[in-house]
Amino acid sequence: MLDAVWSPATTPPLLERSAVHIWRAHLDCAPAALARLAEWLTGEERDHAARFVAAQGRARAVASRGLLRWLLGSYLQRDPAALRFVAGAYGKPALDDGALHFNVTHADHLALYAVAPAPVGIDLERVPEQIAPAVAQRIATPAEYAAWQQIAPAAQPLAFAQRWTMKEAVMKALGTGVSLPPAAIAVTLAPPHLDSLVGEARAARDWALHPFVPAAGFVATLAIQGQGWQVRFWDMPAPSTPSAPSAPSASR
Image (tube, rainbow, N blue to C red; front, side):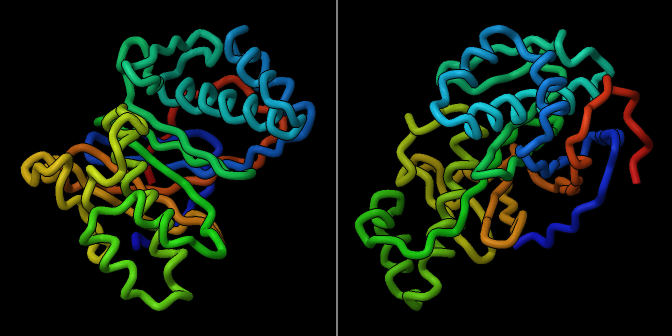
């Protein structure tokens, strides 16, 4: 797995053409910060958050979208509220002018944001305590499932979570979502790479996979089109009262 070394940053550094930035954020915000983030959302985004039954779910939905707007606005030096998004055929969001590629994932209180110059997908999962064989079989190719069965039972949940995030990240990068069956994507855990995509090894070579541990008890994978990327990890400042974006700082 990729060694994730997180660096604190109050504003995004410059994004080089060969770099991918991954941001880690906590979605449980103070009320003042949450109110500020909500100001940047559209009415449709607020309505989406309001559909969550639990108050915690509603707050995290606001925080997730608000922090995305703050982050992209900071990179582009634009008002977060002025950003406009479009949805792909299967619902993947993108900036209407394609100025940056991005993807978002969250689990519980934790969120990850990937920002890149190329199509990108990211997935985050909490490692389960146990996995039923039938569940593992549903996401795996026959060869993957046979290999998973040979793993020691205590290590099977982690291996399942790793494989699932790799496949989900590819689906998100492609913008297909679950319309593409997980078993149509063949991956190898060590070393991590995409073996075939819907049976085509040639198409698989167009993508790089970078699995990593974002926090204790979680696994994640970045999928990005192309090879030779420099993956850098940044921690968002603890949410207090986010201010309007400033210019990106020089890369460190």
